[in-house]
Length: 499
Image (cartoon, rainbow, N blue to C red; front, side, top):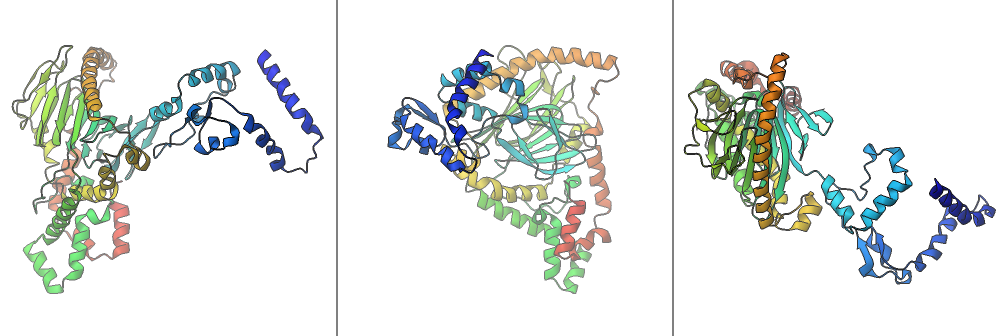
């Protein structure tokens, strides 16, 4: 209180000579007084814009000035968290003095704090069928088409809901029903892009971006519940319409009678053209996906991972390169998988792994991602639109930060970071397993615990949609889309596209 009185007294002395000013005097004349004071500033000064110390009359040595760096894309100069400010604390003079003293002891405090609060964008939602809540801290939104996913976000799918998420490097991730993943980290270096993701529960399919040409397969797409996409020129109907408009009546009838799928060939041709063009930038992607009882690691790899809370985990490598897992325990438990191309299971304790016995639930869950031509084409369209320009400057830290908002790691530093995360997550998850088991026991006693069995709810709705689509594939309702004009097709997408 004494300090507040002293401050008020000093302010009154400053304003006293101004009491005689008329109200008609301009604000510029009043502010002009600062020009008479600023040249007397001497010694270390801290400014945000560079221009504030460039006047030689101010007697400010440039070496004594701490310049705030230009923020990354997506950051502001201001770092005041207005949403979370406590008015009483914000106006407390003692708090301000202590805070000011701490900041003055760390010249680059503003850059550190801004970067700590900055959330890197991990990807965008390509498709959501059903309800897909996303959590950023305590904030919750229902994600839709083009919703952004950032570091720290937890992304869920509810009952009979499914989602495809496009990641900034071109990788894809699919969530089955009643699944949850947390995107903890994305890091860039000259030689790779690194993701740290946690599967909290359910089924996730991680799909790296292949570089080779896509093979034409005229069989129906398996994940039909995600179609049509709101990316209009990725859908098969787009190419059916183009072909329909270029054919005469005789060609129309011949294609229908012979059940030729020429539009699929056009779709795959476009996919391969884009993939070839996007291959000019090839940066390996390293994934560390953590589940409570196992960690799956890989480079440019596609795999399925399923975890049932309080129960086992199952994984299977589908394609790609380097692949390994890490079990639980306080000692080093790095484990090479003898046969990753078959389903393997990990015990609930995370201490043992074995080849899984045949389970229909596992095979059906994998079936849904067997043929996804439209999803692959949508990936390449977004790769060209969102990612290629960024990947071209991945070796330029300044351009990567200012143009795209991402930090840059040196290769040796990122390797140490991965090593730390591997050790840290293994120890933390080992400790958590016992706590989780105790919690699940109490929830079950209260009748609120999750089902500790592998059940068809992960894929049931999607499988039924696919099987029903086989029966109605050539109905008049499906064929009529080919005859739509541009406006009709756009309205059809808005109505039927998965948001």
